[in-house]
Image (tube, rainbow, N blue to C red; front, side, top):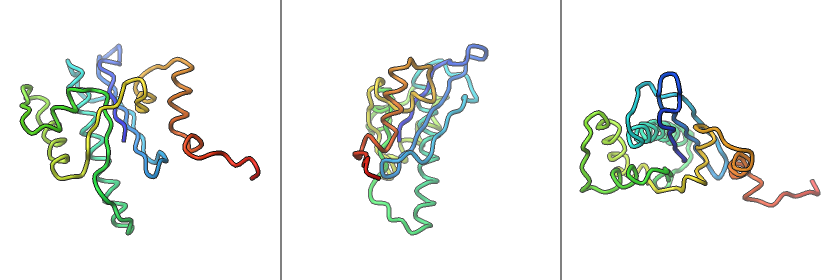
Amino acid sequence: CFTDADLAGCLETRRSHSGIIIFCNRAPILWFSKRQTTVKTSTFGSEIIALRIAIEMIEGLRYKLRMMGVPIDGPTSVFCDNESVVKNTTRPESPLKKKHNSVAYHRAREACAAGVIRIAKQDGKTNIADLFTKLLDGPKLKDLCSRCMWTDYAPINKDL
């Protein structure tokens, strides 16, 4: 799963935009792009909200897969391009100093502690969720789109 948020991306309301893409066996199966319902004053706040939404989507998908009899081994990897979100949600000793982010913060920490997700840092230049949150130039758009396609992972058989 890749998550991203664009701080104050809407010029009229200054609300952030969340972008999430979830892969299963290297194929994108769920994606989400929506303006957040509240105005955030920091990148941390908008990124932690996007992470909370991603966790809810992941838990729903894991439940559906289990109900269909698909075994799920281990946690889901979640890649975020904000280093402070990664550090604050994965380290037990890190304190939260902003009360208005506490619900999303504790939701992410509980999911990590339960072994549902594993959060890691993804470089902002290669975060696929940027497709849903930012205006991209041609080469970067093409690069990120090619990372989503199956053909990058398996050679194309031209005889078929």
